[in-house]
Length: 230
Image 1: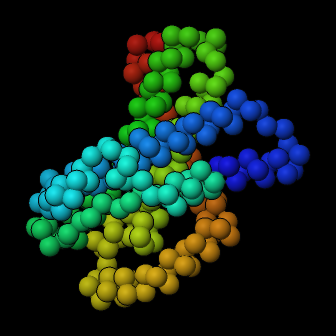
Image 2 (image 1 turned 90 degrees about the horizontal axis):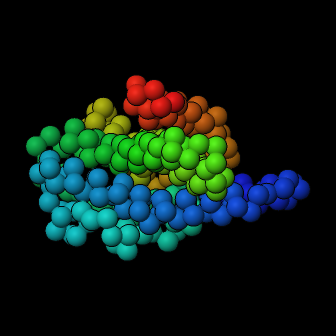
């Protein structure tokens, strides 16, 4: 995010300071409130599926201190994607390790999508109440908040370790393929970072983000349209 802003500055494109501040505040809110929710969702679902590791580690909590990863927070501020400290999960306690691990992994991205949905509903409620008189920085804050959450959900679904998508993919791989998958995960991670920073995934990720974003906004507007408020 800040990386894009600095790029625009270097290109001589004007920046609205109020908009920049709103986006930074939205990102900080996600770092301290939504990333812990993402990890808490992993821990809670794992607990419900029989693994109490996260509970005994004190990770089923929204306390940002225990979930904050400084490097992940920095990346989210600078580049628009980041992470928190992963919740410990022990698949030995699952009845069906592969299936339950996939469900546990999926819980994080779903938490981000739910957070974006709630943000969209709040924004629409404010819009109905205040109309066009709503301050621009409020619009900028909620827009950034919604987009960041959708982007994090899509980013985490990339099937590359250590992202949640790799654990979801693991449910569909053979034992041998899964072994090799994690055997070479350090190499895969390095390749993934090169691919991400090269921009090769920009177009497919943008398409998926737009699909998810449109879905979230459509669901958020439904109750307002049903009552004739929009």
